[in-house]
Image 1 (cartoon, rainbow, N blue to C red):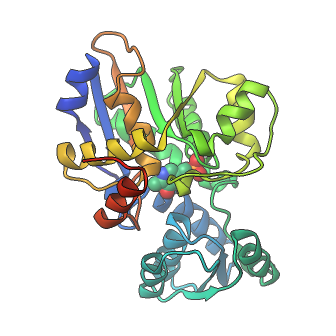
Image 2: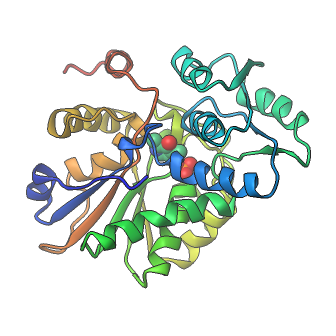
Length: 304
Ligand SMILES: *Cc1c(COP(=O)(O)O)cnc(C)c1O
């Protein structure tokens, strides 16, 4: 769905430019995954898919469940025991079959893959060209509203959002920098960029669990070597504080994965040209509650 584009007064004043928020948090499923997963599922449905299989206990799985319900195609999601009850409930509301299996995502994913067949299609959370194609519409929508961005700020997990935005910029002939933000504990892209190698992290840590891909997709790494992509990392505390500030300023609750990107604007970490148009992808998050953010604050000894 086309999402609102809002000029943030507060962030624009802070950064001396125009900060445009693309509110992917307003998608029915609470994140941009509705575009990426939605587009992929529709393509596979046209090709005769009879069932969708996922192993994501987060925003990707939630979107697979939602789109499957819309398309009248059954969905099976295998998630590890660590998955939040909130996520499982959201997926079951959309009539997905949710199987809880294994202590980690690796085990859940292995079981999910064992159910895959030519008609039972596995929907990857970030590594599939259809996903990127679905995301590229964001840029077209922004331009249709009369805003030509001079820079983009977004969060990076497995790199589908980054890959899709690069694609959207190319379609619209925009050659502008993209600031790719990760938390220190999930810096798979930033580390790969420093080493100029498509590395896999030994472990991922911290509160931005949606960004916790140990290795970004190859497309995202390749783009980071060819395009004008600037990597930045932020602390968990900064990401969390940005969630609270954004809630106050824009009345929208987002998860720390999204707060990571927002935090570089609250902290004025980038020097933008005066009065330039900066497009910020407010990626959203479906399962985050105010209580979960308050619990993180307590764990990080942050006094609010
Ligand atoms: C999926 C997701 C991300 C990370 O996107 P990638 O395409 O994996 O890099 C960030 N924020 C939210 C809310 C997400 O759902």
